[in-house]
Length: 144
Image (cartoon, rainbow, N blue to C red; front, side):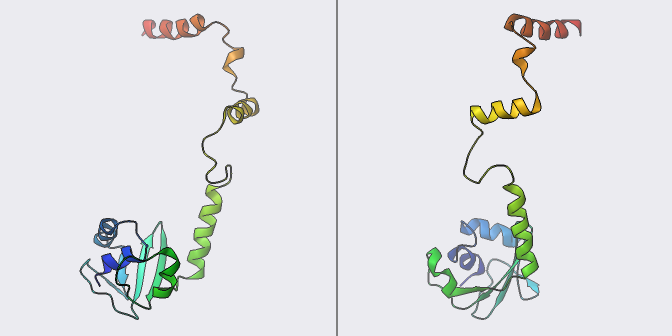
């Protein structure tokens, strides 16, 4: 099986074309050599993949006939990525989730008000009349 199709079928990349692009950018290698999309994958090959600034290594156990479900991926590959790379990935994920839990979405009105109270950026105390607010901006533009 071609390496781009293999990486797509084991769900390492979302589409086959994305897998082919990453291979063209020399982010995928088998053993020590960089490969092309047409490279045939065999059982026992160790594939090195650079994705999201992490160097993954997977060993091919079995070649699937077509795209497989996520639960069956472990039957076809074995993850042999270095522990320090996995720790680096874990640290990056933790640093991104410091404020909001993933999936929580945009800040609510209450969250924004709380942030404004904390920072002290309350515009309503400075400008009570909107005509004055917009009038000052127009006067600044007319002077230039």
